[in-house]
Amino acid sequence: MTKRILSCMQPTNRLQLGNYLGALKNWVKLQDEAKDGVSNQCLYGAVDLHAITNGHDPAALANATRETAAAYIAAGVDPSRSYIFAQSHVPQHAQLNWLLSSMTQMGKLERMTQFKDKAGKNAERASLGLFAYPVLMAADILLYKATHVPVGEDQKQHLELTRDIASVFNEKYANGEEYFPLPEPYIMGTATRVMSLRDGTQKMSKSAESDMSRINLTDDADMIAKKFKKAKTDQGNVPASDAEGEGRPEAMNLIGIYAALSDTDMQVVMNEFGGQQFSALKTALSDLAVAKLSPITTRMNELMGDVAEIDAILKAGAEKAQELTQPTLDDVYRMMGFLRG
Ligand code: TYM
Image 1: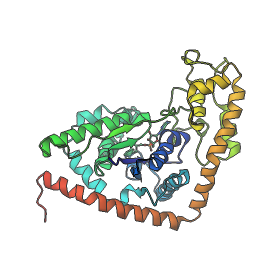
Image 2: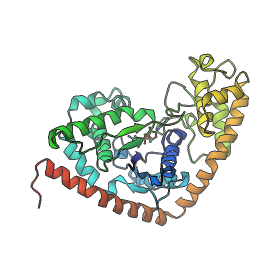
Image 3: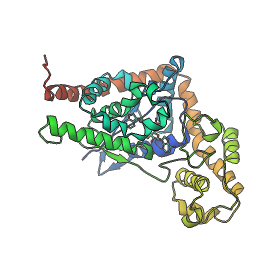
Image 4: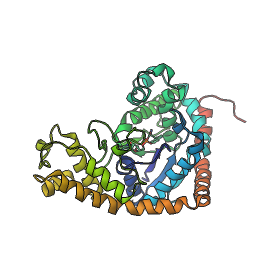
């Protein structure tokens, strides 16, 4: 069976190391994975409609969307094999969103921890879009009948809701048949939750206030070295085992990042650096991060130097995505009983 892989990122601010290690790196792996001559069909979106749900800068949105696509390509997503598209260029997303919204109970959305985190104490002032965000995400996935969704750990709850919405739809409108496959989250590798460099209990995030808390894909070598050097650690030495790393989130985060960047597991890194001072690990980590990320940054900058080319890639991606999704949307309208011409 060909797997249909779909995943997306919000074009808000710059992409950071967590986006790369938790998601993008795995997207490329899945694209390149061909077993018995059967390759995966991969679809990767820049979800600009999601990016406006929590306040946004209209002057920056279009370029952030381009930059997201440029990051995909620079990291190895190949537009001739995978679809790369902007969500707002494929109006079927917003249409399916409405149909799914009408059958999704608000109580289920109230349980979403990401809404609680993002809305904070001011939930009354949060936008309806931020609250309904997971339904649009379900539409993104189900519209393509995706079977696998490679994401970081923070998206797991949204994936569970997507599966729930798919089952409710199948039950209600498809006589219990599996019209929408229940998509599997693919949470791959050792960096499924990269933490902030300033606080090991917080996720690394492109929207966190302090730029020192994250490595951006656009940071240069000096900046990367500076950020790792200043990264918070503790009084001890580098742990040599999980037991020694217990309750030391900052230490384990650096080890996890090193392991993910070098495609190995954390114990291998602990065997190498365990018992040494953190400065040794930090220096090696900076060198490794620069070696892995600088070709991506360079390529991204080159691509951003020719926005017409990126726009053409996004246009072609959206055309293919529309061809793929319109029949699904037509089915759904029909199954829900709409009058169709
Ligand atoms: P977004 O834009 O916040 O993040 C994009 C991807 O990066 C992963 N990620 C991380 N992984 C590990 N450690 C981190 N610190 C870290 N920060 C981010 C996220 O898990 C994600 O995989 N709701 C989604 C976007 C979305 C989507 C979709 C994803 C919309 N529709 C359909 C998959 C399928 C989001 O906000 O991701």
